[in-house]
Image 1: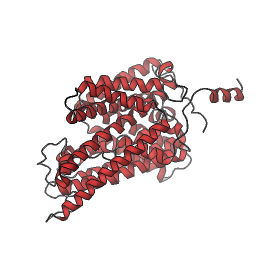
Image 2: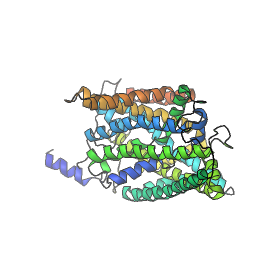
Image 3: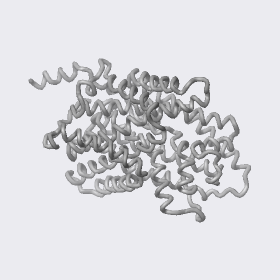
Length: 448
């Protein structure tokens, strides 16, 4: 087949459409993470770290920024839809690439599941006369239908959600400032360092939970084939998303700790930030924050389902999982079968899994992917690259070390359950590649 014929074939078939600019990608990353991301785990982190939530969030931000740089730089080298799966597979070994993709698939698929569970329970609190099962079906269908509309429409929906959440966050800041102005003896440094409760071991454990604030930024790289100028914009969007999230999250938990400094007296740990909002702004802000968290989780579920569908598409296109199903695109360029598949899993998981178990498993797969991307960036730019600079050496190395430390601090049940999932993937990959003797061929993305 001549190159001309190949070009015609590439152009004639359905493929992902390049429709996203830099700020579309940033909005997508922020909606995946959520502007309200530190609010749900606020109480848990505060108790684990004995009040040092700001410190843990900032430490986690540094760790994730190194990883974000590696993600962005690897997107320059491989602007493909497979994300970490592609980077590790092409740069290190195809078998390890599959294992990385398999681990990330668990993370991406679990997020829509726990979002369906959380949204259903939150809605049940608002309208208890409607059964949980009805809400679960509703939200699973909502996430799926929104993602079937197309990438451009999804981006516009994300922008509306980000703006709505930011309005409530600003409302909380105003209420918190007004509340603090009427208080006496407020210690404005205590949220960063309290000599009476500070402990490095508690900070370390708290950071392993606080890193959940940033989980999701890696989903930006799954949109490389749908972004304008991906070699530039994926790096900028990934780093900007982490930085914006870190600054906003730190400000939120700082204000929250100032309003409610005693971490041992929350009426309910899981919804501690809602009670903080109630103290700062009364019942109206209490309900506004609750509703905002519901909206934020809807956005996160929708965005994570989008990322899962495109990760599965990248793996299916390379035939590491059945190509006929997972590697198929609809005429409008959407991996429709994958979107529906993840939606079905989200609905089934809403009845078969608890929110707590799903949330604990998220870090297992995500951090394996983070370590893989950092290792890939180190090998590509420093080991094999022509420029042996400190910039090519230090960020991916530090990113890998930080992520490894966080991964080893995961709770035992998550390590066991994640290990089982990982073992299944390794066995499948071994069979698929005849004991890893046959390399997986990674497809090139369509031209920009």
